Image 1 (cartoon, one colour):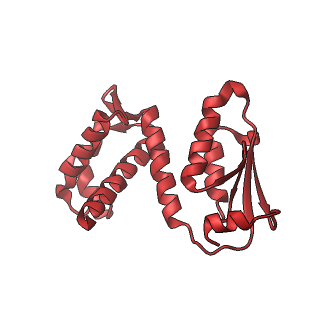
Image 2: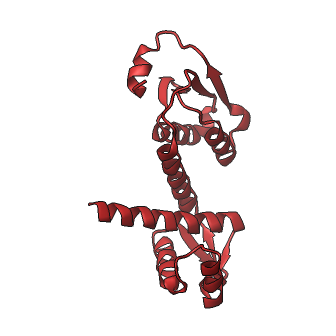
Length: 184
């Protein structure tokens, strides 16, 4: 089981690197798989050996096959599904890195998304649940740990800006249930 877990983690890291690279550049040309480029990646420490061309190629093919990437004009582009997967991988990585030392402050996230954008509202709720937020009311969520950077990214990624408000408070009335829920 440990071996499978390590393989899965390594596969997700490679998948995330490829998706992030394509998102950052906007596209990735076929030049990625050229041996000279792989040699340069090896010298820069991005891959363990120049022979990993097949690993990158097979991972890229798998991402195309699963619909996370697509070829357009001999260049790889990130699909909408790929963007969602990248967001999920990033959130998953974020939640694993959280320092579990509570500073006795609650983070409250309030959002007001119009009914015509209810798909976005659902996406925000699912994302907040995945991070570990607890719902206080329909569009009011609470979390005990610093997550300002993540919320900033989430606002930019989902283009909600002023529709989402991040608040840090010292006290929430009757917070015993929340403390038990977060184990603090």
